[in-house]
Image (cartoon, rainbow, N blue to C red):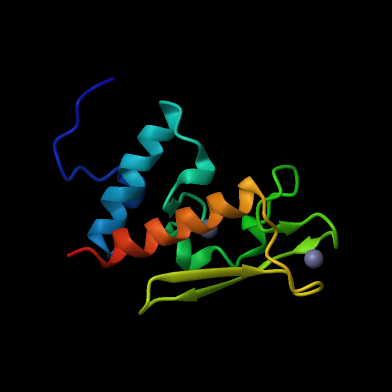
Length: 121
Ligand SMILES: [Zn+2]
Ligand SMILES: [Zn+2]
């Protein structure tokens, strides 16, 4: 793999106005090719945004892994993002529970990391 200079932005992200976001998208796309779990990403290739900015999209529900999904109620989980506190809360709109699953912990962890990375200056 060719080495890229620090701060390199892939051509598909050069029109992303947030440069930290563009660089992180580029780096995570590359890491994903090297085996990074897409569900551990703090940026979103599809929406070209920070994860916490688009995690509420229906596209971020992954039923097979139980990501943003309540298996008991078979419905999508709500994600509440507190930008100021850097906090993330996940709950099911039907049963009100936060599923105690690996997928939910992973989602919360990734959203917190996304908030932290976006805020770091
Ligand atoms: Zn997204
Ligand atoms: Zn539920």
